Image (cartoon, rainbow, N blue to C red; front, side):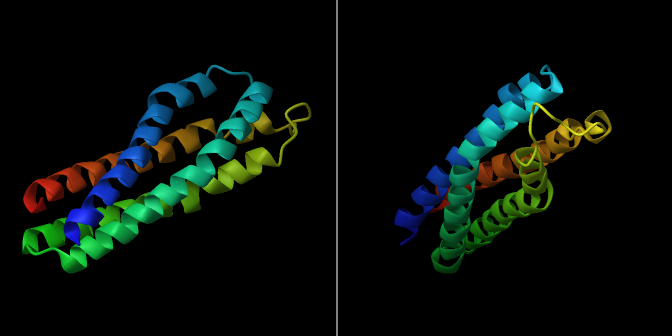
Amino acid sequence: MTVFLLPIALLAIGLSAGTLVGTTIGVVPFYHTLPASDYVRAHAFAAGRYDPFQPACLLVTVVADVLVAITAPVPAGRVLAGVCALLAASVVTVSVTRNVPVNRWLRSLDPEQLPTDFADRDPRAYWTKWNQVRTALAVLALLGNVITAGLLI
């Protein structure tokens, strides 16, 4: 079972971590160069594409890693898979509690009629910080899954 589940976990967390790294090194710096109205428009465009993909990859990772943690024949593999499941679940937690509320608020705005206090409420720095946290967690989960694969496959 582990031989089947671990590659699934690797694929899912690899896609998720890759998407987050790409966002961190490319999309986010671009957002910081945009005027507020263009940022709101660009963020809504991107978030609507990443949101369905990202949670699915993370949930697949969590489930696959939990099952590997239960079924792996080697204790170290069980522990590592459990840690990877927690790391992937932490990415979900950060996303749901920190990034998703910002995404929802930005999608509710009309880029042509931003609130007069938008400059004071501009979420770019806050969103960027939490995106970096979840990116680091996802990369650690990927690294952990690679190490787990080295032990078990």
